[in-house]
Image (cartoon, rainbow, N blue to C red; front, top):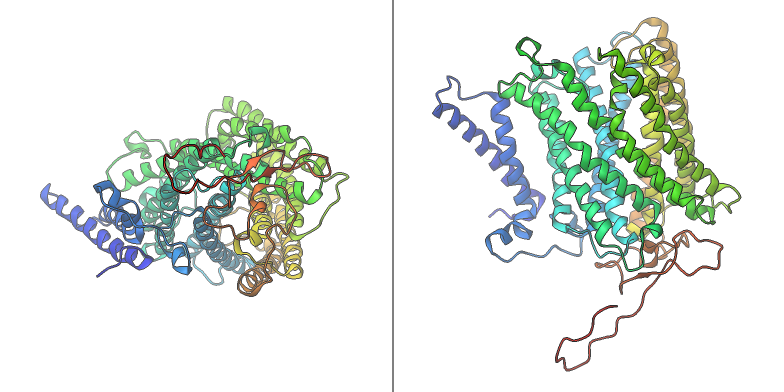
Length: 621
């Protein structure tokens, strides 16, 4: 009998649903008189919808949620043992670990694809792959890294520490939280299956009309990203409700840790804009399988429509990626500078400014697309304007560091690197925001260098700062500090050599997303490839240190960093309900060196009187 509470149960029921869905599609085509009952893209799309439902129910959603819909008793989530990580578990800490491990594996895979890309580009002319194979490699690397950037901090660190930082027992909607994670494995499976059904030829942007006429791999991609978008939307809704309604007594908006503010703003961005990408890919899918013509110019469609809808999400997505990295950097810098946070309200205002401006800058990606010239000026000015709130974040970080008693641990090094790297990305972004220079630099390796300085230099360095900072809290173990610092310096040097040098071929006009290039670019590409291999090797140190430390590292104290925020005022790792008694916030989280009260106290709740009778006054507390 199939056990419907594990990965194996999900796989079994998912496959059954997939084949059932394809059969239903074929039966309906036969019933309505179509000459062919098998139309691969359509049948696969219907089968995927059935299979996704089967996967979710089989992995444990039926026992822990679905039974309730029919008035049946649900089963509790396991609370101990490794098995709880392989089933539908509602504990936010388990979900955070699930996200973290999953996306580190995806990060390793995407990085390996980058090494293959740089091996091909080390020398001009084709070496290892055909042009079509190179396109698939490049597309897969791009979308996997975008998935890591979008979901790793939010899913892993956000899920684990936000409820702790606000004094909550869990997320507002624990079962919805579990659902958002278990939508991720089908996304990964569909993306990894694309090479077997024609591959991806369009890059992660999937521009039509090419994405409408390519092979079935594009349909797999579309279905995967629509599912991933649903994960982002539902997760964002959960964070917003949790932060608004589940803060501990005394935790006012002015006392909220800056990482929680970052997650709050990021969640609004994800909730408001993710529909754009999903709708764009849904229209492509309907053109492919439903006979629509959204992007077929011969039938009244417009390919440029896709770019507007796509970038309306995908530029705010840059901030969905990078604001959590800023939040981690500011959080870590505040604690390891050992002084009050400089201009806290301005930092929060900067996050709000980015939220307000991010939705009106999308068309700077389209300066060369053929849109009307009178739109160039307004989008240029709005894009330049968004540098003001990001500049405020830099000033807050530098002001906090200034005259601080710096504790240069590994998290602090990564946090400072976020500020340095993103400053480089911000400077190069000025050239891409201005129409005259963008026309020259558009679709060159200058854009590749800028994007990686922004996302990898900002968000991924922030991710590593957070992983090292909260690793003791999540595992109850300490990592090897020497190996961690070796990882930092190796990664920092390798990253900056790789992507700083990459600006030069971009300025000279070398196009991105190509498998071959003129011989004149060979020396600089060889240098970029060698430094990229150096960068890639640095992550071997990280994975060894994390795995070894999780297994046999020294036992961590509850608060090894002597930080003030709530997550460090409980054991490492925390108990099931996070705190032994409900916290009451009495002070600000960053008042180091001042005669101020602690950030929180833990008043003891009086036990109920023996003998019962009346359920009276336990209240309050």
